[in-house]
Length: 265
Image (cartoon, rainbow, N blue to C red; front, side, top):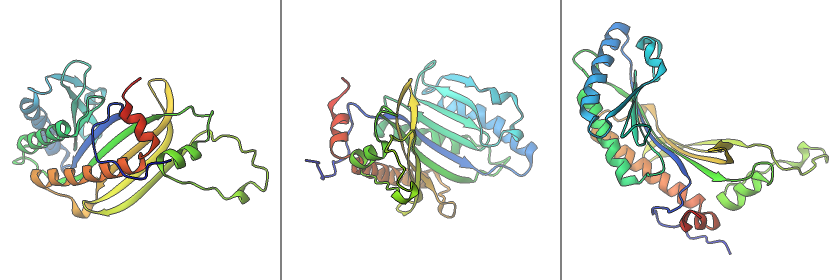
């Protein structure tokens, strides 16, 4: 019988996580020349503040293009070790912190806090005003599923407690009951704690040459409620993570959660 009790948040031995991402954006200067100068100073000062944790620098191909032509695109990547995770990324108007299989919330939260503080401290506000405009906490999960060999909609219903029903009248009696070839579903919900838009996304996809269900949980700020200080952004991030945890453990309760708790085979 399905377990209806929602599990408490806990680390999973066999977590489905592909990547956890924190993203912070800020308004670009209306004067491209001033904005370019500010970013180039920021790049050097930001690296100095985070280099102990992320000594490996990777310049992305877009870094060869002028900053004014690449707004909100990642130009530089800073890794904990060569070709390793975690990492933080920087571009004109955007900073991220990314983690994969070694993710643990407390460690990730600390890294987000360190990167956010480094950004606030490093930004040359004397040249260009620093004005955060948006933050996002995103979790990308991959659940193994043989696309084409099973009914995806049934799987979402039974394993992820998400029901999709198509009206039989769509098919005029000619539906052959064949298995779905793909699914791409996204639902946005307005939240009040934190003030944000919460997004649930389910879609077929591929990771490491394996097909499955890509399940994303995204919490993103509402523009009119954007926090503009480091402390407020961290408070928002903690509240956003509480929503992510509640949604994850609610939808994965039951047989699917048992597979996450068993550990890798």
